Length: 118
Image: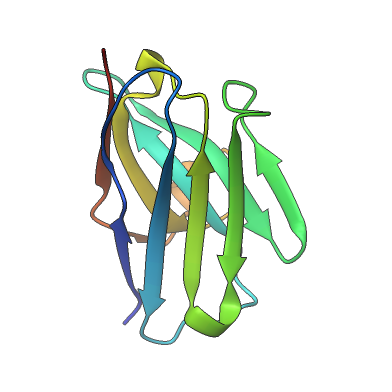
C-alpha cells in the first residue's frame, strides 16, 4: 500500500521560506504525477502545485513563489516555499494525482502544518 509522509512544516514570519518534503513508500513509481494540496482553517482544500514527469504546474496564488520538485531516487517530493504570506497558512498535503480535480487523487499523506505569522 502506498504511504506518503510529509515533513518540513513550521512557523515562519511573512517573507520567510520553508521547504516541505514528502517521502513515498509502498509500490510507488516515478511514473505517477504528484501534487501538493493545502487546506486553510475553515476552508476547503486548495490545489497548490503538481509535477508530472518534467512538467510543473502552479496555482496562480503561489506562482513565482513556490517551486515543486522531486528526487526519484529517494522517492521524495519537495515544495520550496519562498516569500511566504499569512494567507499561505494551511495544512499542506502531498498526494498522488494531477491538477485541480482532487476527487481523482488516490493517495494522500497526513499533512504538515505551515503557519505564517508575525
